[in-house]
Image 1 (cartoon, helix red, strand yellow):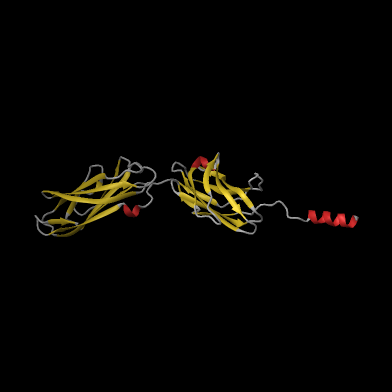
Image 2: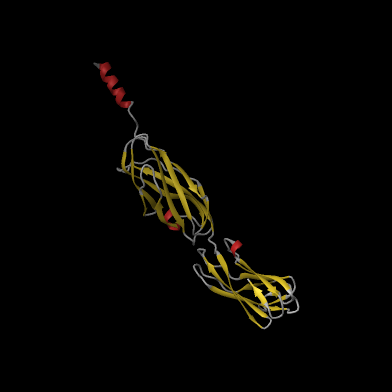
Amino acid sequence: MILLATAAATAVIAGPASAHPALTISASPTTVTAGSTVTLTITGTSNGNYTNARIEVSAGSGTAGTTGTLTSFTSSPTCGSGIPSTPTCSEITNKYKLYPINLTNNQAFSYTITFTVDSATTAGTFKGNAQFYTSSNSTIGLTTGPTITVNPATSDLILTKGPVNRSGNQLNFNWTSANVGPVASTNPNVFSGSADPAGFASQVSSACTGGFVSGQSFSCGLNFVIPAGATNQPGNAFFNVNLLALGTYTVSISLIPANEANPADNTISWNCTVLTGLIITCT
């Protein structure tokens, strides 16, 4: 009798412990520009049956401009495709919640949450952490995720060629600019252009250095900013053509602020052909 009771007691003690699924967290990208998005992927294998459980995502070990709770410098949480099903991502106080999480024993799971790092966030780092909660609020320790580095937001100007107008021997090159970045361009913007070979002489502004001699380039700072979201901002530059210098010329214009994300699309060029003093074409 005693032995049977002891055995039964031993069987109860040896039953499964009240553990929770272990979480693994990855981030993409691990270096992000403020104003852009970060995706956390949370994976694991269920160690039991769970209904209406949830995963809460938070920030840890923040430095510089990314200290504080996750919701203090990020926004707009959205869930991607989930396995076994896609939950809803929402903000709760100072965290983000993935809910509902329904799992069966030994079932593999994978969930993603994408959020935006606010464009006003300055440089710093933070960790994307996660914690599993059962429907009864039972939980285990926080799982620490990877370090995510935040760089300051940048402007992203795009220049588009416009028409070239002529008045006598003067050509007026027109263009428009747009700022598709999350913040305004810095002030001043570096404005530069070239005319090569000799035959064109730039007439832009007394604030520009060089550029008043045939064949030379010019460069100056323009004392204005282009706001985020601005489109069709006009610009122009004048060049005097030496009508005796026949041939083909390239005119390039660049407008590049110091906080530019993609300088590759900040330069535009025209190919101009001077056939006679009266016949000049630029494309």
